[in-house]
Image (cartoon, rainbow over all chains, first blue to last red; front, side, top):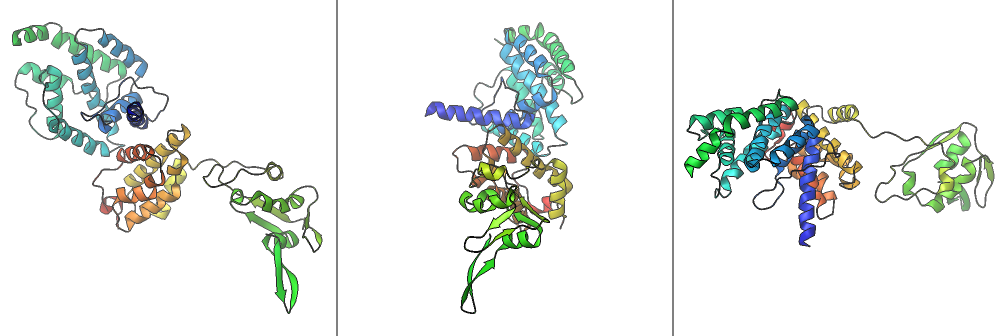
Length: 186
Length: 205
């Protein structure tokens, strides 16, 4: 029975992705669930919209590349944060409800447990959802502010440009300075 | 269909039915929703629809049907509660498959039925229907949720002032009695309509 429920949650999450993608041929590698284990409506829509607007063969190849990196968890989270902004801007004109769904997601983010939200990805996520709610983004140091600005991918970017931009972020913000910064923080 | 016996001036006489009248006078006879009728009842049509072109009214005459008689049958294939058509009956018709209603015709239908609906909301309701249609095509949900009449009824209820999400629950979501399917349908609606949507945001009047 537990397996059935798990499968039904996955099916529901996949259906949100497919609805947003407008295609049932896309087999999502990512699905989003809330802390309570329910399919996350907004984030699964973001995954579907990414498939709608970008070349998933190229993006999946890039995700595979990220997966091999020692900082894969941070990079994955940040890449999705960048994509979230881009697909939101692209889809908003035809799906105005996204504005409300995004705000609801932002509110839920802060209502959930804040335990363990201390890394750079969590800082950037927090900044994004603060901004969505019209609040100060809460970033103090210039490094963080600049990184956040770079993670607001614009709707005009193509798949290749999104990938190139993120590679620039990886090399410009992390491969040298972040490691130093992280070691100093420890 | 053919007719029935009735009393007239103390005598039992034949009272012609619509099929009999159409066959004798000529014209178009519409056998609406033919797959909702019992196949045994439709068997009386066989002699009329094939090369014989006659009606045998039991206990009365055999009549040759008028040259100008045409019968058109309609049905929604696969609709819950309907029957599979008898092969002998199907073979007597030329079959035209009608395409599913497309976006342009749905727009025409919604704007015709609800002339005061805001254009951006017409788009969203059509997208809900098209999304559900896609889900039916890939068998993620049953066809019960793909209910255009239910959608129109729901919008009509919204126009009367009912909460839009409640109206859609009554018109579409609650027609699925599956444990999980209503959740999938609700997600489609939630991806198009805000939770706090009200009548003023949908209609201009």
